[in-house]
Structures are given as C-alpha cells and as structure tokens.
Length: 160
Ligand SMILES: Cc1cc2nc3c(=O)[nH]c(=O)nc-3n(C[C@H](O)[C@H](O)[C@H](O)COP(=O)(O)O)c2cc1C
Image 1 (cartoon, helix red, strand yellow):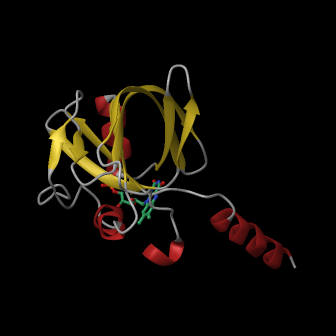
Image 2 (tube, helix red, strand yellow):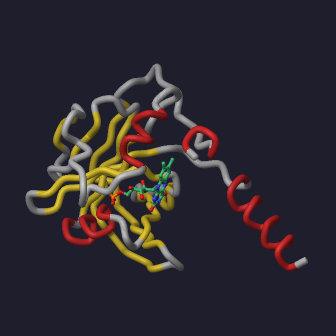
C-alpha cells in the first residue's frame, strides 16, 4: 500500500511539472563545461533572476561554485541530441564542448551557437536541497539567438 502511494507520488513528480530542456554552461579558471538541465525556472523579474537545480556530484556544480557564473542555453524543438550529448557523461571524463560551436560570454563561459536563446548569470545565492544544489543567478546578459525556434518541452521518453 505504502509502495503504491510512493509510486503515485513519483509518477506525479515526474509528470506533473512542465519543464524545458537547457544546457547549463560554465567557466572556472581554465576549465569550461556544459550539462543538460531541466530543473530551471525564473525566480525574479526585477532584477531578472533564475534558478538552476544541479546534483551535488556533477562537475558543473563544482565549477559554478568555483567560477561564480553560469549560462542557461535554451534548446529548441528537435534538439534532443544536444540534450543527450551533454546529459549522460561528465565533463570530468570527457570534453563535451570539443566539437560544439560556441561564443564566449562576459564570464568567459560558452554560449552555444545552436541554442535558441541564452541567459548569462552571476551567482547570487546557493541553497542545498536533498540531493541537489539550487543556484540562484542574477542575469547579466541574454539574447534570443533564433526567433524562429520553439522551445523544447522535456519529455522523459525523449531521453530515458
Ligand atoms: C534531459 C535531461 C535533463 C537533465 N536535467 C538535470 C537537472 O535539471 N539537474 C541535474 O543535476 N542533472 C540533470 N541531468 C543530468 C546531467 O545532465 C548529467 O548528470 C550530466 O552528466 C552532468 O554532467 P557534468 O558532470 O559534466 O556536470 C539531466 C539529464 C538529461 C538527459
């Protein structure tokens, strides 16, 4: 019975909140990296601020803490492969940006040329939740790179 209730919660947790798909990129010292993230939201309009929720063990987590900046690159419909590229291996083991075209943000972090838009953020605050860190960032630059693209909505079946 308890198991069934837990299953229902997990199902509602996985499907009940609509998410986009993003690549969070970062630079710290001479290291750059990017990872796929769906747990992202706006949290303030004035000044514009966003939050990203990143697992404690991910390399991106370590680099955001070190570098103090991150960039949210928004994926568009049809860009699931980019999400897979950045979402299943760690930058500790692989240079995920090797064959990817990017520009440099103010922080030196990579802005993916293929992204439909980006928001570059200065780290404002950090909270620890269960197994993730919430990074709140103040937006310092941002642009819609391709107005014709439509954002990708996260669907488990696209990735898992
Ligand atoms: C579609 C998708 C969404 C993801 N969303 C998140 C997320 O919101 N937060 C997170 O910590 N990991 C998320 N991940 C997992 C990370 O992208 C993955 O652990 C990655 O390998 C971490 O890379 P890093 O060690 O280079 O930082 C997601 C993966 C996929 C495929």
